[in-house]
Structures are given as structure tokens and as C-alpha cells.
Length: 315
Image (cartoon, rainbow, N blue to C red; front, side, top):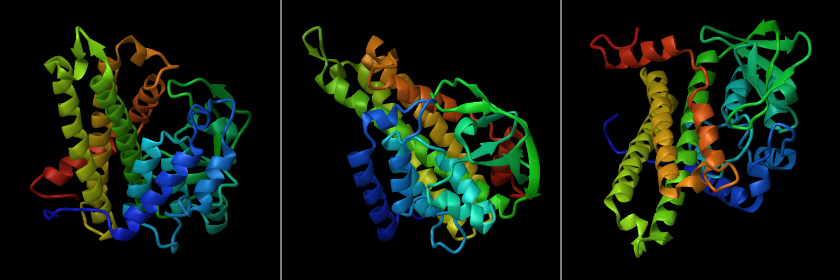
């Protein structure tokens, strides 16, 4: 696992297709779609590109493709249950998985009572770190406002059936979330760099001040390290390496930290404008904060990462 890791030609081509699609269709309005609406045309367009079916068994996708796509979706600040969809399409029965992959249904994956995307979800999956179940809502969903302006809700669930391939779905979900956070962090870093390059204070561009330049450089190094770890984790998962799951967890933690650092630096560089939700970075930083705090069954995360670095290895 020590040799340089890069995406394959096919994975880079897929990422480029998603990048072009997002540049054309992921407008400011789509990016800022709040809890009262969902950009279904954009989401179905991702399905037509084959993005939402990457985790469906026998569809030919893997963690590498998911990582490449998620990075571009994060950079575009694309809305939707990206990581949850990859988890669900890997673990659900074929009929339900195909419906999600077509973009005609939306899934809520989490541990009740607080569930992401619950107010507009057609499919519910309960996941508690030990297993996952196809579920149905036992009553009405109570909408909840969130920092990231995504539609969450409180809901009681009734388990319908246990799901299979949960460990594979978890690996894909962690990889996707890591990639999305990296992409969102990279977007904020790029915005900070551009602002520092053009904003003039005291007769010089603010990027020439060490107090501005040094944090930007350090943030870039953190994102670069997270990017490499994401690619290493994705390859390990696709090759069936015994540390694949732990590496995906480590990549998620690394990307969360790097993206949060990018948010802090972007706020600092933009000044008061950076904190305004109406500005160019505030709404992105808020979603990064929310995604970095999504419950991930911390005990399991700690066990996997510690096992990876222990002398005995994963148990």
C-alpha cells in the first residue's frame, strides 16, 4: 500500500463527466435548495450519468469510482443524500436499489429518531453501527431545521427486514462522505486563495501578508493529505485489502478535519463576508460542519483505526 495511488483513466473520465454536468446544471439555486424543496431534475440527471448506480451489486462500480464522483459533487456543493444513497443501493434488495439508482426515489439512512432527508424520503434505512434494516415510518415525520439547510426530521421507524452487505455499504458510504467533504473543502480553499489574491488592504493584496498566506498553505497541505488517503482507502476496498474498512474510516476523519480547517481559513480570509450565509462561503462551511458531525458510531470508528495501527492488526 506504499506505492503512489491515482485514479484510473476510467475513473478520471467519470469524474470529468460529473464535473461538466455540475458546471452546467448545479446552479446557485440548486446548491442552495433548502429544506422546502429538492432539485429533482438535477438528481435524476446524476442517475442518467450512472452515478447513483455505482454501488449497486453487479453494476461495475466500486469505491474508486465513488470517491472520484463524490469529490466532484462536494466541489460543486451538490445537494442530496450522496453517501446514504451509496450505502442503500449496496445493501437494499434489488427492486428498491434500482428505484434509488434511477433517481425516482430518495433514501433516508441513519439512526432514529433524527434522520437525514426524512421529510422527503420514500425509503428508510435504519443503521446503528451493528446492523442495518429496511424500515418504514411509524407515524408522521416532524421536520427539523439543520445547520446545513438539509431536510432532516424526527421519526419513529418500524424495522421490516435486515439488510445484507452492510460492511460493504459502510465502506462505500465512508468513502463517499470523505470525498464529498474533501471536495467542499477544496472549493472553500480555492475561494480563499482567489480572495487573497485580489483583495487589497493597506495598499497590497492580503495574500502577501503571512497571517493570511500561511494558514492557506497549511490548509492546502491538509487537503492534499486527505486526498491521498481517500484514494488509498478506495483502492484498498476495491482490492479486498484487510485494512480497507479502517482506511475508509481514517479517510473520512482526515477529510472532515481538512474540510473544517478550510472552512475556518476561508472565514478568516473573507472576513465578515465569510460568515454571511448569503455570501460565497458561509453556506458551504455550515454544511461541512454538519456533515463532519454526522453520527458515525464513534466506538466502531475508534476500534477500526486503533486496530489498523496496532501490532495485532484488525481483529
